[in-house]
Length: 193
Image (cartoon, rainbow, N blue to C red; front, side, top):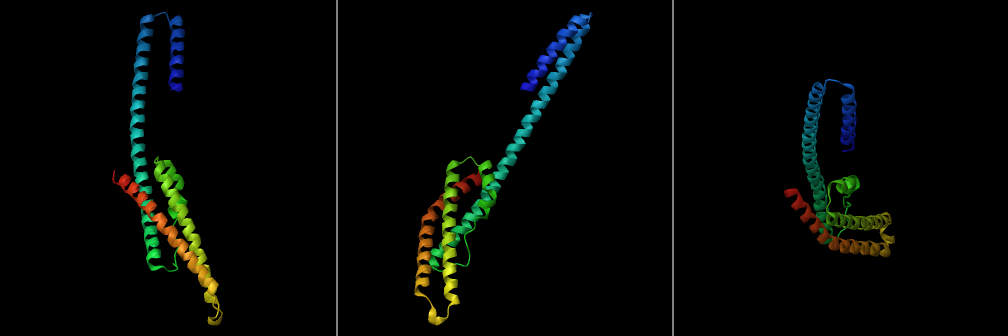
C-alpha cells in the first residue's frame, strides 16, 4: 500500500512539473491519460494475480493441514492400540509409544492449525505418552535386571518394582484414552471437511 501511495505521489509531482514545462497542453493531457490508464490496468492485473495467488496458498494450506492431521491421527490410533494391549495383556511391552509425529511436526501443526483445544489435548496426550514410556523403560530395566540374575538370586523387590511400574503405566493409559478419543474426533471432523 505504501508503494502504491509513493508511486501516486511521484506521478502527480511529475505531472505538475511537466504541466509547467510543456507548452502543448492537449498532448500533455493525452499522455497523462494514457499513462494513467496503463498504470490503472497494470494495478488491476496485479491485484487479480494477488487474489489468485492467495487462493492457491489457501488450497495448499488446507491440503498440508489435512496431511499433518492424518499423520497425527495414525500415530494416535497406533498408540491407542498399544495402550489397549498394555491394559488388556498386563505385560511388559517390547515397544514404546510413538511420538515421532509430535517431535517432527509440532511446529507445523502450530503453523497450520488454529484449534487451540486440539493443541491442548494433543499436548496433554503426548505428555502422558512420555510418562508411560518412562514407566516402560523402568519395567524393561527391571525385567533385564532380573533376567541377568541366576534363578537362585532372583529379586522379589525388582519384580515388585516392575509390577508397580506396570500398574502405573496402565493407570496412565486408562487416563489418556479419553483424551486420545477426543483428539481423534476433532482430527476426523477436520479431515472430512
